[in-house]
Image (cartoon, rainbow, N blue to C red; front, side, top):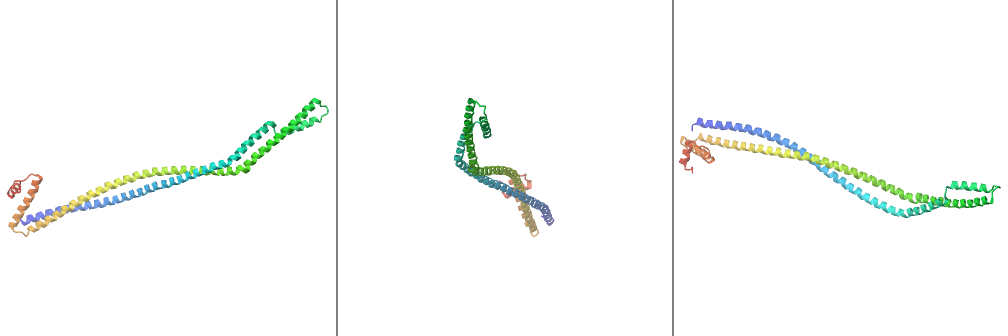
Length: 299
């Protein structure tokens, strides 16, 4: 092979290296841009996952507080029942007194004012001069009856006052505590319900954000696969460039060889190329077929 042919081969290889270098630089830029894009995706994904963790933790805290609220409700309900037990003797006494008062009222058959008016009117009638013996006896009997009914009515009023006293002096303190328990229980139930609604809203928001995070994660995986594929292409080009540089070095060595050595090198090179084509199953030229037969490497 002549020097100008060797120089032409080297130029062809260098031109190919220039093309590959341009491709490699474009790939390097694509890799950098895609990697930066994936860093932004990764940041968004991580921020979303942080929110998911926060929205998973907060409902747990709310539910723990809600559990404590219901424990307080149970305790207050128990105390309320105990208070009712303490009230029972007073309530039973009031029940007994009401029955007694009602029986007195039934026996008195009238209000205190009405009975007093009837008594006064009867006493006035007894002072009249023209009363017959029969009417006088009737009025006296009626007078005694009214006095008895007034006495019974007085007893009924006394019993009623005792009922009022028990309610105001004895039961009022219980009623105040019961009212406080009822208010406390209602407040706790309301707060518990609000907490549950808040937790449900957080769970719904968490699931929504988690779905977005999963999409970002999938985008990150897909993007990093693209980066990996681009890197493989880049390394393939680099390996090809390295191989071409080696070929240039080999061709440069040809300048120093004698014509006989060049002929031997040409034959070795052609034999190597023919072997590669033969092993691949590619079509061989007559020259390549002849070289393989002469070398004895064709089986």
